[in-house]
Length: 390
Ligand SMILES: Cc1cc2nc3c(=O)[nH]c(=O)nc-3n(C[C@H](O)[C@H](O)[C@H](O)COP(=O)(O)O)c2cc1C
Image 1 (spheres, rainbow, N blue to C red):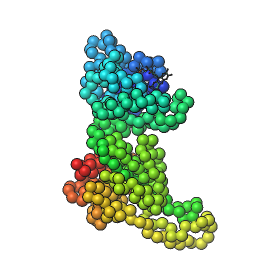
Image 2: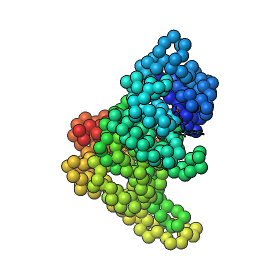
Image 3: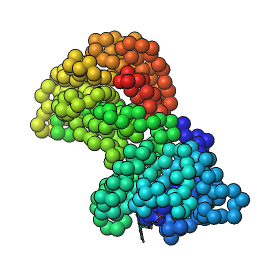
């Protein structure tokens, strides 16, 4: 968890500097100790007073301060993680070149903690080959990066360069505090969300799945370095910008989308609530109100069974089981019948809730019951599943 962790937020001189206020505020609300450093140029965009008020700690501004201790070493040693947010092209370039000529660059050079850069800048700046070369070089050295989001930039351009949503930065921080990039080089296919099967052009059959567990798995896998492909049903939430997604809101569309990506996936996690049945003859026009109505339903393809039957020995397939009774026992039967490597048996079936509890059952080995918010449960599922890959 993130509570009581020491987060050093280094704010550099970009237009998104004001958005770092929300990040610091949310970190403090989450129970972190948050120390802010502002570059000299960042102070052109936002004042130290704002960050002092929000963080509840003095803001570090100057390497040669009369504080009575050596600021850059003190905070470099203090931090559990350093988050450079927003990170200018300038600070990325300085760190890549080994320059330590101000408080932030010198602290980054001096720290043994993980350093997460959150770049935000004009699209041409971000795409500049020198910036990209610096990002690549720093990634190779173990520095961590978030991708900027696409959208309308402050400079008027539309493209990749926006500061990410604060909630996404929090997910990244939570991951990097506890996990290495242990899934780098692994391709993971994750389906999530409910299907909608048409009765007529206005009505459909669906279920209570929110899709949040699958999205939590996708986020967690992404920040641990996996190449993630999401196949999304009718989700309530937006899929984050950094996750490639194929929309598939019927069982048939999901079948096609999953088979398209399955052969490249090292791990496939079927968290989607795929419809078991669909109307046999969906009406072309809206069905008029009348007497009682009987709908004839037909079975959809059992995608999970097909994946379990067809997987190669080097592939891992994970299913989910949502049962209203004898959950673990029924999940175990499903695991065997569908030739899965793992099944996750959900204990709580409350749609949309963030907390969950489930038992992760491997085909061989010891099962584990975990509980918590969906993001921490996602990491625990990945811990078990990735353990098999090694
Ligand atoms: C109005 C304005 C907005 C700027 N926005 C950004 C930005 O979003 N990202 C960026 O990398 N640089 C931006 N810059 C340029 C940086 O401020 C400049 O490179 C500066 O040297 C960064 O210093 P620092 O990295 O020490 O804070 C902006 C400059 C101005 C004048």
